Every structure is written in C-alpha cells, then in structure tokens.
Length: 109
Length: 123
Image (cartoon, rainbow over all chains, first blue to last red; front, side):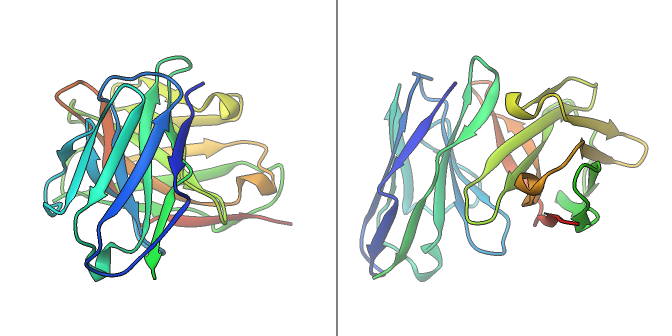
C-alpha cells in the first residue's frame, strides 16, 4: 500500500520567507502527485497537480517539482494567507486508492 | 461555476448506517470527464480518501472500509451519496465531497471541494 511521508511536520516561518515542503512516496508514481492547501473550517484547495502544474487561480509563488518518489512544494515568499496545512496526495496502483500524506503545518513564527 | 454542498445527519448512533449526500450546482454530474469522491478528516488527523464514483456506476473505495462503504450517483437529482454501515466512534470526522478532474497524465485529482459536513458517532 502506498505511503506518503511529509516532512517537516511543522514549519514555523515569517511572512515573506521561503517555505520548502517535502513529500516522499513509498512507490514510484512518475509525476503523478498533487498538493493541497487546507485551512481550518474551509474546504481543501488543489494547488499543484502532476507534480509541477499549478491549478487554475493558484498564485505563481507556489511551485512543485519532483519525480518518482521525491517531491517538493515551494512557496517562494509566504503571504499572510498561506499559513495552513499542506498535503501531498497520490493514487496507489495496488490496491487502487488515493493516499494523502500526514500533512505539513506552516505556521507563523 | 461548480459548487458542492454536503448534507448529513450530524450525529449517528453506533452500529447504524451513515448516509451523506453531495449536491451539485452549476454543472451536471453526468459529464464524463469526472469522478466524484468522498474524503474525510477525523478529529486532529489528516485527510483520508474514502470512496469515488463515476456517473456511469464505476466505483472504488478504501480497502479498509470496503465491506462497509458504498457510493452512488443520482443523475436526476444531480447529486451523489455515500453510505457507511456499522459506524463506530472511529468514523467520527468531517466529510468532504469533491469533484475529481482528469489531468493530462490521466490521473484524477480533487479539484473542487465542498465545505464539509461534520459527523459524530455517539449514543
């Protein structure tokens, strides 16, 4: 079963700083990974799909990269509204299921 | 613009069946580009995919829940539903419905989400 490990668990940064989040997959899935942003009381939001493609309306300060088992989400300069929990997600091949990482919380330093 | 709205009982008694419904507005559930999914978040934990359905009837679900979970689409009402039998406290969660759009690599990602509905399993 696919396992996604995100690190660090928490990232404490100030507005304007760069955030680098990591996601490691237990199985290689080429570039088939997504990143979501989730704020308390709100719907999760798709940020990145296929590892590096920004979803419509997502600001350019969000970028994704990676292939195979190692993936990265970078927020180049944190805006006040970017403090949230971020999840990576992939679809495992067997069993066929969608798996989320445990999340990285980006909070205000 | 598509909007999704979950509805559910709020509280369910242990061992009963939970039924959640996701109503669509702004688009048709019958478009063959999308799957429709349910994702839940237990208190203090992360997101957990539960099940997905295609309007034509194709379904798949989380292996650990497969014996208890089902999903269906009602095209006449433009909504889809999840049911979960024999619920326990471990099924307490905020449940989200989502549209799953297909990417150029033929993967499906949750690109539109509802705001979620809280479900508590308690007697």
